Image 1: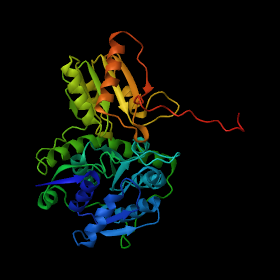
Image 2 (image 1 turned 180 degrees about the horizontal axis):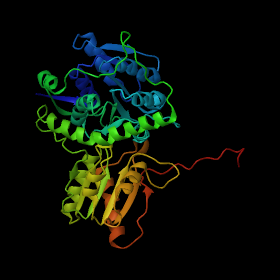
Image 3 (image 1 turned 30 degrees about the horizontal axis):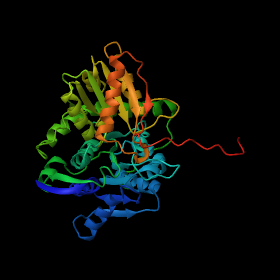
Image 4 (image 1 turned 120 degrees about the vertical axis):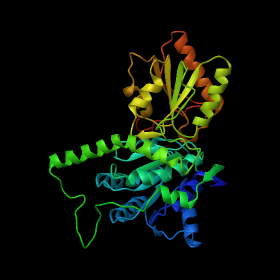
Length: 404
C-alpha cells in the first residue's frame, strides 16, 4: 500500500492500470481528459500493455469499448456531459447485450448554453439505461469504486456494465492523499476476466439481433433483476475489498453520518458530502440534531437502506445538483420520496443547487438546513426551491422580438 497525492482523474487512471485493462478507448472531453492522458503516458512508458484506441467521437469510444468487451477483453472508457449524451445510443447497446464494461463519468453541465463546470444532470440522466451506477465522494473512492466496478461488472450474477461518476473539477482535478493498493493485492482481488458468451469466429453467436416482443420483454426483466440483485453482490465485493484497502468501508451502498439520533436528515450525492458533514457538525454544536445520508449507488437503488436511514425523522431534505424539468423538484428527490413510507416520515423537501458550477459552500448548506428546520418547526409549508448564493442572481430569459 502506497500513499500518493493525486487528483480524482489520476486516481481513476491508476485503478485502470491496476485492473490490467486490455483495451482503452478514448476521446477527450473536459473534465475527464486527464484520465486518458495519464493512461496514454503510462502506455508510452511501458507501464501498461493495454491497446489504446483513439477514436473520432464519444459515440465511437463506447462502440470500440463495446466491441472489445464482447470479444472477452476487459475494457474501459471515460467521458462527460455532451460526450455522454453522444454515447447515449451505445450506452443502451452495451447493457442490452449484458456485456461487462466500466466507464467513468466526470460530471459536467450540459449545453446549451455552453458550460464546462460541474453538475450531476448528465450522469443522472442515464439512470434508466441498464447500467449499475456508483458515485464517488473523493479521489480515494474514485480509485476504490473503479477497481470494484470491474469485479462487479464481471460477476456472473451481474454481467452488466458499471458507470462510476465523480464531480467534474471539484473531484476530477483536486488532489488529495490516496492509498494506492499493491498490484499483488489487486490481482488477488480481481482475477482475469472470464465471460461464457463472447464473439468468437470459431464459435459464432449473435448479439443484439431482432427479438420477438415477449423475448425482448424477458431480456429487459433480466436486466432489471440483475441490477436489483447486484445490491448483494456489491456488498459482498465491498467486504472483500477490505483486504485491498483496509480502511475502506464498502459493505453498504449508501453511507450515513450521525443519523442515529437525528431529527433531520440531508440526502445528497458526491463531493459536497464533505461540506455537508462539516455543516452538520456546526449545527449540532448549536443543538440541531441533523444527520446525512449519502447516495453512493444510484443503481441499484436500495430502498431498504434508504428507509432505514430516513424512517421516523421530522424532516428529510434532498440537496441535488441536477434538474428534472417541468417539476419543482430534482430527480434524486423523486427517487427518495418514492421509497419512503410517508406515514412514518415527516416533511420531505427538495433543494436544487450548484448547477453549472455555481459554488455551494459549507455555510450555504448550513443556511439551507437552517431554513428547512425553521420551516418544519414553525409549521410553515415546506417548499421545493432552487437555491442561489446571495451574490448570484438568476438570469431572466430574454424573449426574441419576433415572439414579443
